[in-house]
Image (cartoon, rainbow, N blue to C red; front, top):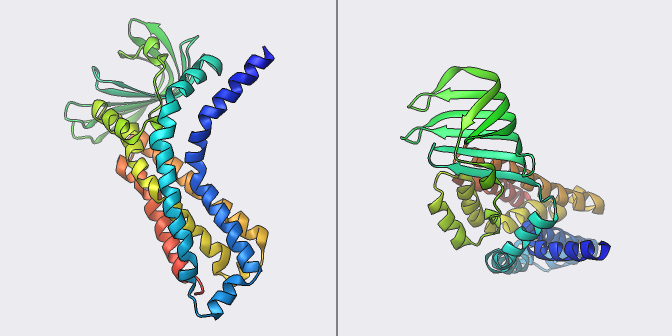
Length: 315
């Protein structure tokens, strides 16, 4: 039993490794560059090159050239390596790890023009937690939104939601007061426990072409559109983190004297970027903002801040 569990764990994390590399490759790149530049700064190598008449821009140019290849490597990992192991990863995840629990499910009920998002679902008890529903009119305007803490299956295509907050809108998409607080509410949908329990590939594991096809098949699912635009925007993540991190490493004299502070600031920059990406992605997934904005706003905001910091560096 122990050997089997160990073998399963090894296989699972072997399949998961390309996903981890893709997600954290930009952060790894920044920290690696940070360590190299710190050593160069402490050995006065950067100062010596500047005294010789070489500008800091030219000194840093090779780093950005190498980053281009890093970005291509990250793109290749997502396009060819991850999709190759996606099915094995999802199958192993459902059959060996928490096979009764699924998280962050997003289902499209085309018959009722409704989108259902469930943060946690138990396949065994048919119990949902943290539910968000958005329904639309035929003209695609928002009809209602429902947030509920819990939900359980009643049968006959019905779920019973508990502790519900309901917002309604007219056919122009304008909110109709007041907010409705309901202890329990029945909803009818074609999304059954069987559909929720199906093993299907997470869209984040698909390559660019597969993701584009999924967007055509499920045009009302905002998560797919967010992932699609994020896939394009993600190619610039390496450069955004470098623009933010390099000035904090060598750009300012007072910061440059403290090794721990420099490395810590690079880690903080990575944390801010991933947090902002997570927040905007969730806003896009729930339809609060357009998918293209959810994908590009972190890049635009932090990229602009990075360019400003880079311009303020002592050259």
